[in-house]
Structures are given as C-alpha cells and as structure tokens.
Length: 281
Length: 157
Image 1 (tube, rainbow over the protein chains, first blue to last red):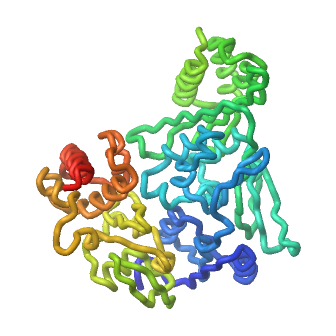
Image 2 (image 1 turned 30 degrees about the vertical axis):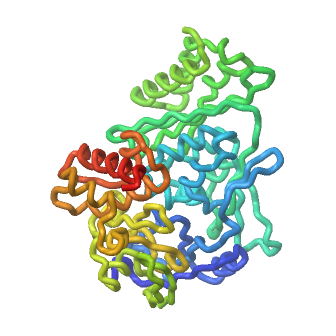
Image 3 (image 1 turned 90 degrees about the horizontal axis):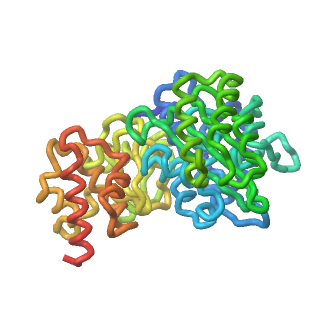
C-alpha cells in the first residue's frame, strides 16, 4: 500500500458519464484539482471506495465571454483565471484574489469549482464571487433531464449542499464596474488569509450603484457590510466620505460581531479603497 | 490498476499504476527518479515539484493516473546530453545549494518561471518560487542564481 489507501479511481471524459458514476456509487469522492481532497484523504479515517476525477471532462474547463456575462468552467485553475484577458479586463478583484491565493504550484492545480465546493471558511474565492454577483451552476445525478441548477454563491454556501453534485461552471455578470480585493495574512503573504474584503460597485453615470462589500472573516462563510455599502451607494467615487463609511463600518461590526482586529483591518482596507477613488477625509 | 501512457523526460512510457498511486510514488518508487523528494506530502514545501506540461506542480498532490497523456519533467530531465541546464550551473556557481534537498524543486520552479517570463524582476523570481521552501540558504543566493541564469539564457550562452 502507498501513501493513500486503495480506492477505485474513475476518470470520466464527459459530464454525463461523471453524473452516471456519481449516481452509481454510494458515497464517492469527487476530485477537482485535488489540492484539498488528496490532502484530506491522507489523514482521513472516513475513506471512499470510489473516487471520481474530473480532470478529463473538457466541458468543465475554460473561460467563455458570453453576452452580458462570463462563464468560467469549474475545472479552470486559478493560474488560468489569472492569465485570462477576459477576467483581467472585467473582474480585477477575481484576478487579485486568485493571484494572492496559496502558492504558484497550488494555483497551477487548484480549481475555482473546488475552491467553492470545499466549503472551507478560509478560502479566498467565495467572498469575491459573492461581491461580483456570481452564480454557480450545479448538476446532480437525480435530475433526469440533465438540467443544471443555478444558485448564487451566497445561497449555495448558506444552505446544505445536495448529497451528490458537481459544480459545472461559475457565471459572473458583466457590467461597467469597479472591483477590488484586499487580503490580510498574519505571517507570510502565502498564508491563508486572516481576513479579506471584496468590493464591487456598478458605475451608473459615474455613480456607485449596487455596492457590495463582502468580507471573508475566515471563521464563517463570507458576511456582507450592508451599512458601509449604503454609505457609498449613489455617490460619485470622489464624493464618498471616509468618515461616514467608517461610522457605518462600526455599525456593521456591531451587527456582525466582528472583533477589534477585523474591524481595524477593514478600516484600513476601506481607507485604501477610498484612496483609489481619490477621496478626501 | 490503470494503464497510462505519458512522456517522462522526453521519453514515452507506458505503465500500469495503482488507482490510488500518487505521481511522486510512481516517479520515485516505480521509475527510480529520486530527484523528486518526499517531505511534507501536503503541498507546502515544494520539494516534490515536477513540471506537468511545463507548469510547476506538486507530485504529492496528483494521482499518477491523472498524468496520463501528459508530459512530466523531473530534475533528471533538464540537463541535455550530459550538459547541465544554465539554471543548474548557476545554482552551483552562486552557492545557492547548501543541504541540497530543496534544490531540484527550486530549479524546476525556476525553469517554469523563466520559460514563461525570461526577464523576471527579483520580486517576480521570489513570487515564482513562493511554493518552494529552503531552510538553509535564506533565498538570497537562490534569487541571485535565477537572475544570472535568466541573463545567460537571454544571451544564449
């Protein structure tokens, strides 16, 4: 026996085949990039008899520029997202989150679908995907018509996942927008974040609209700073007042029970954000 | 068992591997390519780095079966006809090796970086090697070595 206990490894090439295998076996493990799951398996006492690898399913890869949105195949790696001209042009915050996440070899292997499906609190991508209004497309073996269901990342993380599912793609709406990602770590930059803030706002006639501030607290699924976002809503970027945003942040911090460290990090991030707007005090 | 066909260090190989066999196990235990090291086995240290289709990846986090149809390069595969790769020479010249345990992974990560970006800044070299830990050198000489190798490769020497 090697480093991993024995299991049967299935390598479907189509989504239909993958869903068929998912239906056939009792509790199979679905393997994306493998950076979480294979590590888990090395230490796990609960061991699958069947593992379904998705690396050969070409339908789950690639980035497509659609009318009004961008579709990212669930098996697209973080490195591929960082290198994509479409993503760089439309969603700089997603590039920022992917490029700061983990290390170069992990980014060459880890996938966007795996990052969301892992449901770990500390991973980088859910907060930024929530801020961008992304939807995830999920396919399950129980749907006889083979239809995929779409859910917002917030809905997906906020509810119990289906027993058997495969994330097929992430769809992000395109708009004239601003997006930023701020990330804090406690020791080295390659550490998992201790806190991260994802900012998104549509620009409507030069005014910030649909402002979202999603926070990765690393102790829960991402939370939303509603009051701080409201303090920016409808204003031109240069008109946003740091003082009023920080006051609103204090209310959010109380509502969300954020500790002093997190409040301090967020205040710093919001100051940096408004700095990019050219806002005064 | 799974039958796989892949290119390892430019040679096509056909192998039967266990379903749960990791790429590092196949390289070391089946093929005797011992330059790829076992260490943390969690994807943190980078000593098991290999190039998969030119990209640096961690062979402790990849199933051997997933290398089917791909091209794997290990440290044994980068010298050409007995002549060291400029990165290997530069590591020796710059004293970028102490205990040497991290060196194969470092050189492969540096190769992936230089193949993609022949003129990286020191910051970009450090970022490109962020998945590889060295507990001896303090990284300064490693970065010097990659910078000099990059210059040599550009000059075509």
